[in-house]
Picture 1 (cartoon, rainbow, N blue to C red):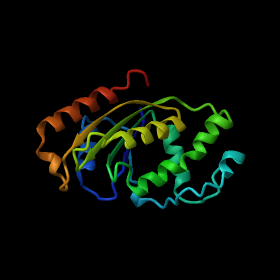
Picture 2 (picture 1 turned 90 degrees about the vertical axis):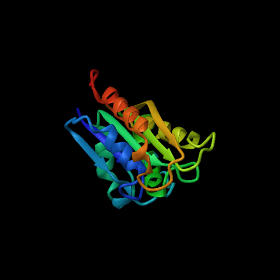
Picture 3 (picture 1 turned 180 degrees about the vertical axis):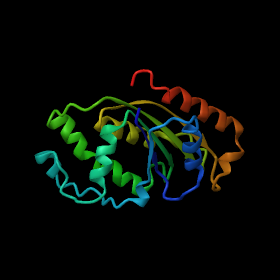
Picture 4 (picture 1 turned 30 degrees about the vertical axis):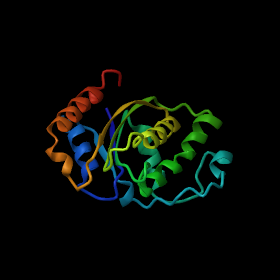
Length: 186
């Protein structure tokens, strides 16, 4: 089974990285991690070239990301919340999956089904803190035939790695990872 983890934060070692580490800690093989902030991914220009051709006009690291998204059996996103949304480098990656949306819905490309899971952490305790992130990730997953299987959401963790002191967070994240990644349908 191919597992793709996406580290949404531009800061290495922070709370969302800790969550991804816990989630993937069950020792599954075939795990690959993408870090959008360390890739050369330009923002989507909205030129609609992909809608006419099924290809993106921009030549950067996104072509390799597209292949990894299509090949995965499971996709796990771990991200902090920035102003009730995704960090800019990760949002650029999400926007650039418009090419996959075009291939799936306009060109009727048969894509392998896969499952996706979201881990999100925010500094504030806002009631609607995760709504924007969840909606964006649902549509991101849909572009490449990845079903949204749910998520874990943690509020009130601002300082880098402050989530490490939350033992219930760790237990819940590890248990969810074991359940999600067991791959009985892969």
